Structure formats: structure tokens, C-alpha cells
Image (cartoon, rainbow, N blue to C red):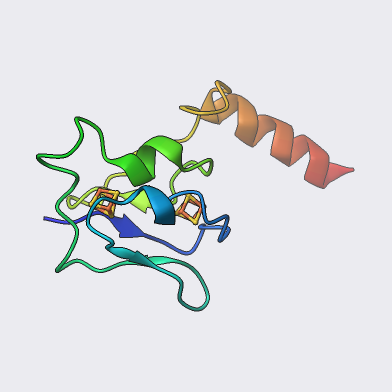
Length: 92
Ligand code: SF4
Ligand code: SF4
């Protein structure tokens, strides 16, 4: 059981110091989680600390491959509204 950082990570460093298992490390092109070390914060915190601080929606996945912070969960903008706004921006 381990969380996973994917390529939308912007290398902000916010998660690395919070990990109680020292499982997060700087890599190229983005930070990674050592699956052998990640405990999903079990026994240390009620929430995975990396996902709690991460400012990028979708950058960290659960062991089931589901975003810990899905689209709209941090911005408060419904995904369909964001898609419509992006489409409009691209059209201009
Ligand atoms: S879930 Fe917890 S143990 Fe796993 S990488 Fe994130 S902060 Fe570290
Ligand atoms: S907090 Fe999120 S965006 Fe920042 S380094 Fe960690 S995974 Fe990447």
C-alpha cells in the first residue's frame, strides 16, 4: 500500500518534509514516493500528509490509482466549468 506522485507534480517541495516515513524523494522530472517506505501515514496521522498539503489536484494517487485531491476539490471549481473556461480561452 503506497501513494504515488505522478507527472503533474510541480516540484514544490511541500510534501517532502512532512512525510513521517521519509518516503518522498526528489527525482527527475518530479518527486516520487518510495513504495517500500510509504505507510500511507497509517499509525502516524489520520490523513496522508503528502496529499493533505499538495496544492496540485490529481498529482498524488491512492494505491487504487484514484486522485487523492480530485479535480475541483482544491479550487472549488466544478471540473465541467473549468473545462468550459479552458475551451473558451483556447478559442481566442
Ligand atoms: S502517504 Fe504518508 S507515508 Fe506515504 S508518502 Fe505520503 S506522507 Fe509519506
Ligand atoms: S506537494 Fe504535490 S506538487 Fe508539491 S512536490 Fe509534493 S507532490 Fe509535487
